[in-house]
Image 1 (spheres, rainbow, N blue to C red):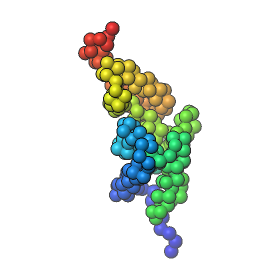
Image 2 (image 1 turned 60 degrees about the vertical axis):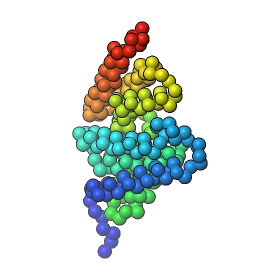
Image 3 (image 1 turned 90 degrees about the vertical axis):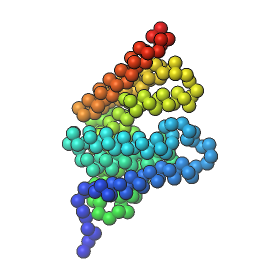
Image 4 (image 1 turned 45 degrees about the horizontal axis):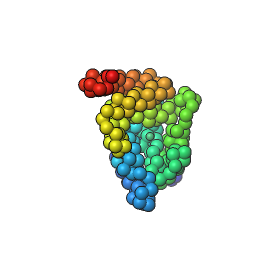
Length: 224
Ligand SMILES: [Fe+2]
């Protein structure tokens, strides 16, 4: 009897176990570093933020993959592992390192076919790609689109306002900071290719635009 190869379907229980692994990995990356090494007080750099961002990217990429006809399991597993190495590695190396960690994890669990592991790792490895997304496998495209979309919209706005607090800015800067979220949103919208991601980008841009207008409407000195 050879090694039993199951179907590529990842069960919910398996996916939950992967989540546990990824979140423990992120928390451990922070714990083992030297005090003061990496500005963990900064909202984007904490294990909690990364954890949350990953969950957002999992759910966005699943939605895009389902509607665009990509392999949902490849996409969601790649999304879950895409930033696993982000807190312990330099930005330029984290995609490759993440793919290595995912491969080790998936190979240590019996039954995932090599072709599945290969597709997952390729998506993780390529998720920092800056070029035309249609040059990539559809699952990689779904992952990158989801990663871009999480930076815009209400969530991106909340984070930007939180950042203002850390930078000791007053709320009078809010308009300018929300403009930055909008700018980023337009950048993200110009890069996404699928119809599903385009429509999510459009909806999220609308939310930020409204918020910007409401601010201006309510804060007297802002309209000057
Ligand atoms: Fe990400």
